[in-house]
Length: 569
Image 1 (cartoon, rainbow, N blue to C red):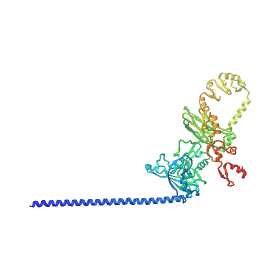
Image 2 (image 1 turned 60 degrees about the vertical axis):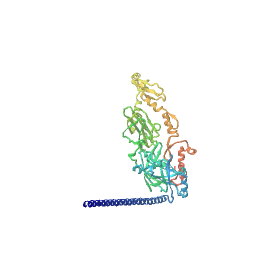
Image 3 (image 1 turned 180 degrees about the vertical axis):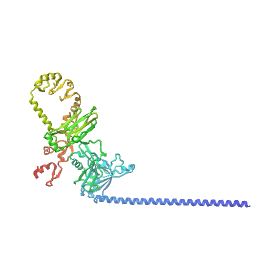
Image 4 (image 1 turned 135 degrees about the vertical axis):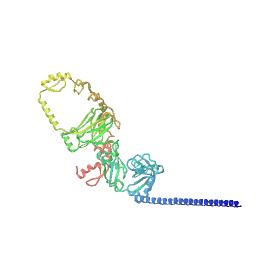
């Protein structure tokens, strides 16, 4: 009996424990379920709260952006999202759709003066892989407007604006935000060229002014491209006043050009290395390449050259090794002399010397450029420029000529030199055995017998050369050269053609200082009589205030105005 009661009690205790455990597990599940429900509810509320905050922040930013645009636009509110497309043009003026013209016109924007826009790149989903460094690149610039002829939904950007907005080649996005803004007139700009040599351009600030005429705005940090003939320079805008973005229309801006950053110099751009008188410069030039130097002739030196007291000697000595060079010199504004464009040249084998003396009427005070051209192979050389005194040389030459006149002489029948009469017989006997006179028309040079076999004349021009120099002479002077205008000439006629006759030759405009193509003759007869080119005729039609009376006068008639009105010569 006791056994059955004990088993029944144990069974009852076990069932009670199982019911308690099931109850405990049920309570635990209910507690966890309530906890999860609470967390889900809190998460949903957090998301909803975040969305409300984001919406409020976005609305606040939109209102702030609208207020900024309204303030920047001087009461005019204009913002468009447009797809950017490029077109070939100069300056910073963009093309807008016709609908933009109507919207701006309805708000009276054209009554407030020139139209300016702020252009900002809109980052899209496809551009999420852009690095943080690239994100820091400039993504905002300013521009003027060229015309309202673009397709709806698109904006045309010239290369200057495109390169400043999208400095990274192959970018994913081309959607930009275009907003109307008002810009203050600029008073100061600090620019930095990307390479050395920009200040070597004659009147480089006038060249910069000509380039800026194609711009309506400047923004701090952007790059400006300045073309001067075949040369291209890029200048970075470091500082602007009174604002980081300014208008350059109808305003006078003080411009400072600082030295270029040596770390950013481009190796493909020719550079003028300074050459001091009396100092030897060593260098190396590859075949077909140029190395350039510059030197200065001041007013005092030029006066001494004109009187014949001194002369400038430019000498190059090539190291032995099979290479050879050519030497070219030009006076600025021709900054980089070449085989086709130069004023002085030397094509001798080995060492070469060019003399700038009073015989050269084109020698004036100013800057000169030296071009060392690698004619054959890689050549190491030493270049020098020096001022030679002619005073002692003239005295020696005069004394020598006087002494030769006092001696009784006779002419040798073989070499035609004047020999003292007492030794003429011995000289003629020796001269006939060892010397030969060249029989070529106009030559008559006396040569040693062993030298005569290497003495040759060019079949085309008749000039005499050593046999080893003939190949270079034919290649340099008689090989046909093609001018971009279509003419085919030899070297000397080509130099004259490109210096005076070629319509594609580059000249310095007397009004803007820029290097431009000469073109054809001016259309106006009076301009042709003044010697103005086609470009100068148009460029000189711009007006400027007279310094004496303030009256607006065309640049090409300013000299006549000064003489006729103010009696100034």
